[in-house]
Amino acid sequence: MSSNGVVTNGTSAVATKLNESEAANIPVTEIFADFVANAHTDSLDLEMREKLKEVIVDYIGVTAAAGYSVDSTPPIYKAVLALGGAEGSSTAITKGQKFTPQYAGFLNATFGHSMDFDDTYSPGTLHAGVTAISAALTQAELMGSTSTSDRFLLAVAVGYEVTCRLGRELGYEAYSQGMHNTATAGIFGSVAAISVLKRLTSRTIEMAFGFAGSKASGSMQYLENGSHNKRLHAGFAVHDAFLCVALAEAGALGATRIVEGKFGFLNAYSPNPNKDLKRLTEGLGTHWEWLVSALKPYPACRMTHGFIEMAGDLAQKHSKEVKGIICALSPSNFSVVGHRTPNKLHPENIVDAQFSAYFQTANAWIYGSNTGNAAYNKLDDPRIHALCERITCVKDSSIKGFGSTIEIEYADGSKEKQDMPFPLGEAEHPYTRDRVDQKFFSLATPVYGKDDATRIRDMVNSIEKHTIAELLDLLGREASAF
Image (cartoon, rainbow, N blue to C red; front, side, top):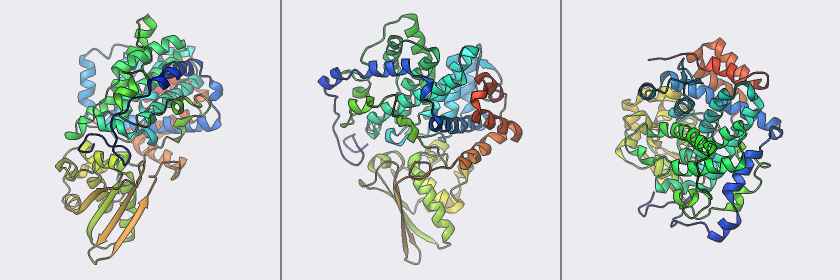
């Protein structure tokens, strides 16, 4: 988001359209529809199963905690009730009653995205699991005994894959147009997950994708005032995916070539000059791109995670007074978390703090990197605000992805610099399974109690022996901190 409105991963670019001949020769939408229609549980090898169980356990912990105690949950829940959403047979996590499928999916995905604690896919700068898992859970519950846990796992994997591959081609550049990849790509992944469980034909899936292209949305304007819009983006995507699939099944005619067409998804939603349709479809069904998705150790924008970890580690090693801190990040990430605007320098609400490199660095330096959601109880902490004034964020075009560097200048004149090319959770800096469980229990135990939290974790770990109905029976039990 530079002065000319377009920033790539360190370089400027003008909006670039896909080559029409290339688009004509690579029918992406049809290829994706075929992939979804022909997906088979044979793809669920041991690596895939273990990864799926990790992300599902993580999703449940994050979603339950948000449904239980996040500030935006009561008004969003109230709105769904006002619209008659609680009149179906589908489960919303922690709500203790049943909903129509589109509203159950909406609530679960909204809760799952509300803490900014859900897993991320770095090449696409998005969260794929919150939409894929929410859509698959709701549809699997609707299928009852006509589907299996393996089919559910497959639906989640396919939903992830579609979202991640589309997000990779959107790139960071989509953010320069104010588009939120989690939502815009997420609706396609949600359609895919639902379609796998329903065993839809390729033609029906293509039509559902066609409608999804008209419903894809998610404005980055939420950054201006810390609004709840971002949390809702994932929910809107899942809600609308159910509508898109229903329309396609009913025989409504959706747009063709919705991904690659002249006015299609990739052209309309991102100026990325490096869109590659061959890369987008290559290895589909054999190479699973989504497996590089990373779990998040901190409930904050992923772009701040390097600063949180480095500041926390360095502060533990030293007790010296800090004169100043320089936080360097890519130009694209700077545009989201680094601008020295009042709402980032001194955030007054949770969303602004989640997207503030200043607040996250200062909090980690003073209170450590593992304060979790309790960090947002310190929005008026004078020590944090004083340190924020001594933090400078700068752009560095040599930094890629979610990488970052931090330089500390101490009051005695000494300096210390640290570089983190990959934040904790990425494959190059892995998040171990014991930490997955630790995070889950920290989130789920206050909601369900230790015994039921353990039952939930164990049920996911052996999901092949259970039904989704059994799992949702535990997850749907009413729990609220309000």
